[in-house]
Length: 167
Image (cartoon, rainbow, N blue to C red; front, side):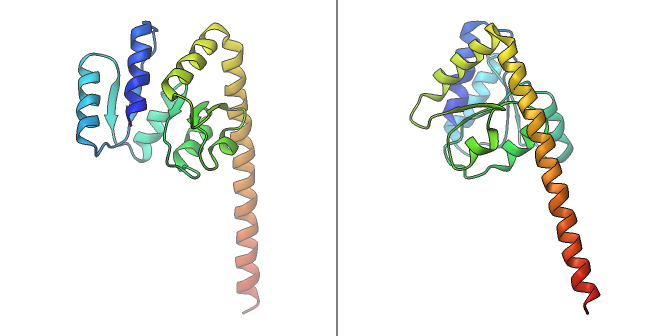
């Protein structure tokens, strides 16, 4: 919620050439208005909810996926970002740290997300090699996850086939 606005404002104040794009619905009336106001001021671009091809295109347009949610167990959208080979910055919640691994940065839940994320982005700007390593790790994670999913699918179809053959 509000971490998105705080981080966007910090990035805007620094004058970095970063296009801060936000996707997703917003049910909170005050946050909704804050997102609209920030968009009008040029602080961020809010595209609203995205699905299917629109979501894939949104993810492909990113250099980093920032996910400040404090209420997640193993969010699908983090897997989608990693499968798009995008480094992730997220709070340490549920399985998120295991999902992200070296393919981004996990911020402790007790830390100020926007402060920590700005410091990380600043470090990545100063040392692009560190960011590039996160991209390589995201690519490796994608390969591992795709291979595992394909193996699980093959195992599942073998189980189905053996069940059908025994009838």
